[in-house]
Image (cartoon, rainbow, N blue to C red; front, side, top):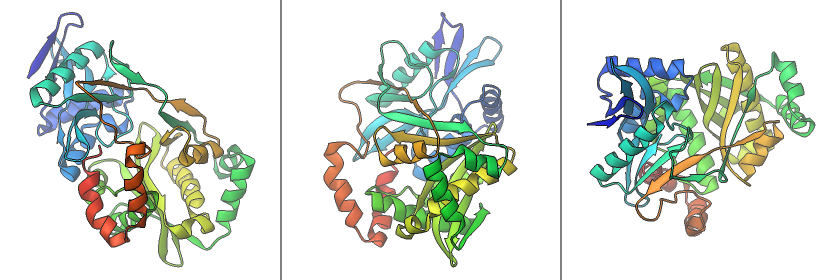
Amino acid sequence: MTFQSAIARAAVREADLRDDRECARIDAFVSERAGSPFHLTAWSRAVERGCGQRARYLVAERPGGVIAGVLPLTEMRSALFGRALVSAGFAVDGGVLGDAVEPFAGAAWDLARRLGVPEVELRGGPAPAGWTVDYDSYLDFARPLAADEEAELKAIPRKQRAEVRKSLGFELEVAIGRDRAALMEHHRVYAESVRNLGTPVFPAALFRAVAETMDADVLTVRHRGRAVASVLSLYANGTVYPYWGGGTLTARELRANDRMYFALMAHARARGCTRFDFGRSKVGTGAAAFKKNWGFEPTPLAYAKRSDGPARAVNPLNPKYALMVATWKRLPLPIANALGPWIARGLG
């Protein structure tokens, strides 16, 4: 379906992500514009494959077929959390990249109406005129990597630096991989971590799809052969994105999470990365405080929404989910792991 824009002299259409040549053109544009990993077609396809939520990727083209902008959308459908077009699904970024912001806004809303979806959410990028924009809920934490390990330690504020030094004194082993065994080990740790926080775990199929199709790997910290902390990271444009990470209850006393992120900084630097993006955290949370302790200055994230009726509210800090979160924390891990992926695939 094509949407015309006389103002921007661009046509917005839905891309065919089954066409490898189309995907290559889009990904080349994303790379040229230094887009996030979530703008890449591989992310949309991995989400569709791993969670069953359909990709609806929009492209703006000028006469002659020159790409002017892209907007990755995921058609989220959940019996528990409602329906929405999200840019991008299961991502912290992915709003309009490039030109034609208003044509994209109109095209996305027209597509939502055609699909019977009552809401469109754009995570990052320029906000369309007239849309509701939230500047106050989320923060991003990113900074350049230091030149070497010693300089990296000095870049960490004194209190947190002491924690990192303590972690270096424990009997911890760091392993890096991306094969099925590494992903299974990571998912076990991550599942326990999010259960302890009261949230359902994402499907293991999502992590496999991302690792198999994107520049990604898993860094795991083990104590006496047992994994206690693990993170799946993405890489793009010289930046490492530690995206899905967590630790077991044992990790805290071993400072395993501190060891994990410090080791990831060294690993990313060895890969040629120059920037560390610690990712999104909710304002006022322990996760945000943890990242500040590492010397990362927060940057507000802007999320724009347009909805026909009440907007979705899937944030676990929403008071309406307080009982659910408290109950989930007490679930035996096998039960949480069995039920979690079915619920989490609809969070987006």
